[in-house]
Image (tube, rainbow, N blue to C red; front, side, top):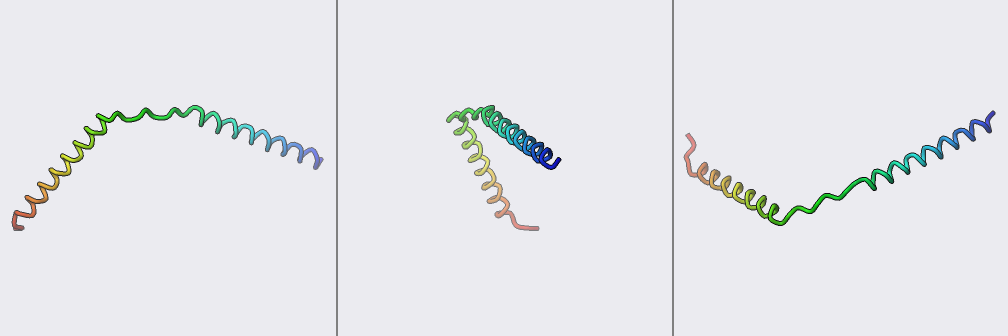
Length: 69
């Protein structure tokens, strides 16, 4: 009886390892790398960020010039 349980657990363990290994292999194989971002898009986003940063600096400078009530 004990041998039967040991053999059963061994089979279950092997089956789980095979299933987990198969799933991890399939999940890694299914991932497609993202397309690289075009250089023009990167430049446009950085220009927008820089413009926003400059606008915030101007607003802070104006706020510093105004006396507090």
